[in-house]
Image (cartoon, rainbow, N blue to C red; front, side):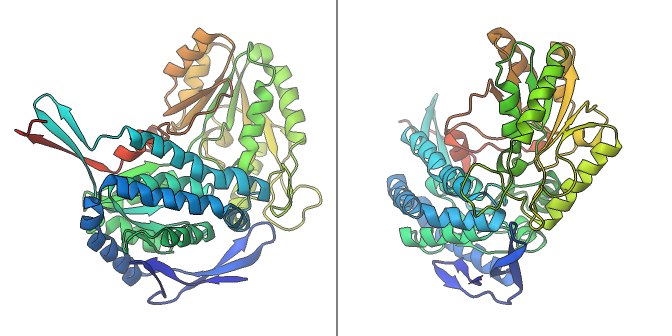
Length: 474
């Protein structure tokens, strides 16, 4: 078992002021795979002080020099692919092939998008007779989740560093190993002391301390809507900027003229990463004339989704991340059954042959109505709810009948209808006909899915203040 007790503060690995140990649990085995220490106020203060002291020099560093260090980090990250994949697989249960490819691969994919955006990023921009100056906001506290750890760490840390901010990162205490490995790579790349800092901790501890700290200028948070609301309230007294990427309950609208692969792709997308994605298409809405056929396809597809240990190679899905998450999902599946939804596949308990580990059966419900809990609540597991609709207007109304607004999905071969519906649904992103997004797009949502945008030029501007200067002609 790996012991990880140090924090990365002011360019050095340091011991915590007061050690409070926490075991990191491998969700495939339910056994500890590492031990970390949780920080306290003194650790948070030390990291913030280091970031504050480093900020003036880093902000004044020419952008090309900052980018050169990020490119050095990029090469190190790529060279340590296998290590990162192994860490992610152990800590949060992604199957090793997925962890070493998709989960690890978010890093270079997003960095490529930022490099492209930086080629055209203007720190000073003319506007009539004034100058618009984009300057770094300052010290950024970053709180990242366990479900796509490198996706969120890279989306936050890299653009903030590029524009001249300094950072204190708190990775998820459930899955901290990838964050610690990321810090090792930052150290190897040679960023100046205090520019990047990492303190492990939980939300009530280090998370709250960063949110209320007077020397933190911005909080960038990805996680649950409940936690995002709490962070916003905690940060209000200091009026720091708060950027949130929160939950989702994406609608996947399948019209009768959709591709024959639309339903199959929708089921597989929902089950990907064991359903632990905020942008998963967890509500499938099918035009009534196609509904019966769609249910047959969905049932057959879900029954072919295999579940197995994260350590095994293959295209299966792994466990969900924790006992608490497993119990929550089981409770929601039970609620779906009790409230009258039709169980097409899956259901309660572990898949056959797996009597240990937080494994969930790939589950599909049909005849789900808008008043049911599984229609409204984010489950964050491999559970799909299917509902029929009668008209385009009906589908739009149903899709928008949620507190969330992250990603919606539309399946139809009618180009005009596809665009018309995409403009009508209330979400930050709309994927149509299973065409994924390229790197550098603005990732983020509306309503209770958050208020920030990550990726590309929008992700760079997220960490900037806008200053206007008059009387200084270009």
